[in-house]
Image (cartoon, rainbow over all chains, first blue to last red; front, side, top):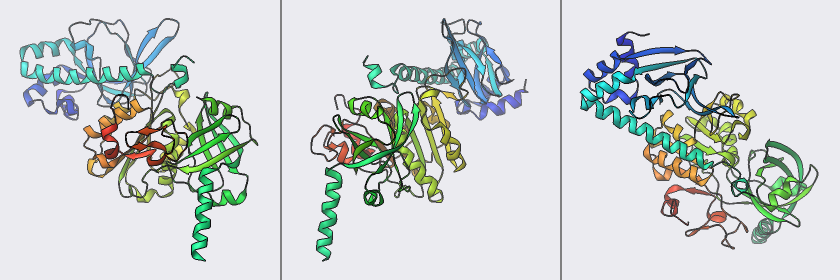
Length: 162
Length: 289
């Protein structure tokens, strides 16, 4: 869904893409699509093969991991301008490590991960910008995960095992 | 005569801070499984009439046989009829408080400490970033802004809790939003019933456009959260002197005498709990401080 021009316009709203040269932006627009997702619609499931990197344009997408005996645990919500499904661009993981479901009606941009990897390999200037941005995203997620692990709002007595 | 009056007032104020005055629990609001708000009223009506506090200040609450605990005032500073304290049951004194009922009596000393600079912030945008039990000391600021909304620019509240069940005052958020306060809520751990944000407070900064020259950032919560909120505020070029932090330390005397709450050259009970960050920066995020 979405013409290349429409997609290009949406991409330019995202700070991620502002430092790209027009030819790079065009290249990314050509491998991207816009997708509307309704509330509760599943965008992808844990274990699915990775196909797209996503950016939220509107709405809210929940990332869930299924934990035996606990069910689906919501670990994160992606909000407008947020990137998710980033591991599809890294070579090490070939399956979705979390599922994604729309919490409310949402609009996302999907970028074909394999074609993006190819484009980055063929044009290292583009690859540098994309990978630098991805590194920022991964670093930010790592920080979030650390803070979640610290359980900073827990009652100190329960944390001390009292 | 004028000098005598001044002395009398001074003695009365000193006693007010040194000796607890009896206050009755008039209501209890259960906020979460381990947090409740206790609404107090001085037994002596003249004490109640003469009592006032500023947003951000705290009282020492005394339970006979158990001791005293420093508790932030979480109610409206313009409501002179009652004083609210939102208390997490985490030590001997607060656990003793958790066993008290409506009509029981506690001792109360205060108010103590430095307030949030609500007057100095007039004309500015306000960005409040807080988490967990860090919201109660900021609730009086929210009420103050609601009473004087025209004096402030854009007001944003970014509040985080562990789970949706740990959120404080959830029934008030809509009222705050109606008063043009952009209340944004997030939880660290989501569940199927929660359709809001999942993620930690500092990471949501990127969603807000802050006018660095004209925004005051107020933060309160676990120190680890405060640290990352300050990193984010500084990354957005908010000047040090526009960042305000309320710290919680082991406060005992409330007057900077016992040293339990010392932080570098400061006593949190006397010089704080609200600090402007430029004063605090040399001692902040220093191991063992």
